Amino acid sequence: MNPHLRPLESGGPLPDGWTTEPAGQWKGREVELVYNPRRHDVMLIQGPAADDADGRLAQIGYEFVATDGQTWLWYRERLAAARTALERTHGGPLVNKSLGL
Image (cartoon, rainbow, N blue to C red; front, side, top):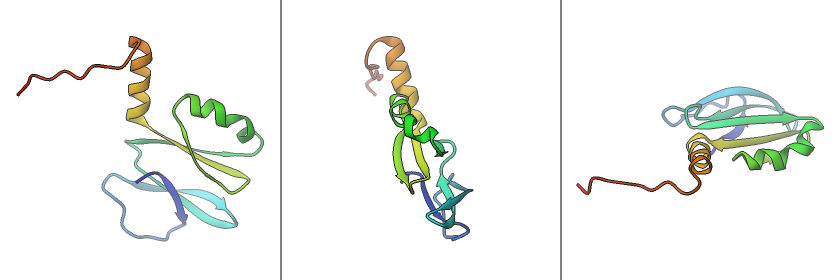
């Protein structure tokens, strides 16, 4: 499951480790952000800054989720971002090694 928005205080069960935070107005309704803070970086961008942000956010591993025309929701998987950063540092894909057990 990816981070997403839902109506504020709509309730319902969350997967283990997931949480909600109020996110303001979305298409005229109060919403909350649902995500796993240990696994995801999430970003809500409002206003004109969002117009230039998409290319730069994609370069650092963020994925576009949705927009209501005034606010844009982006997220990235922390593990994938860390793996990409390590691959850049080491000059190529990391090799998985095992003990052969």
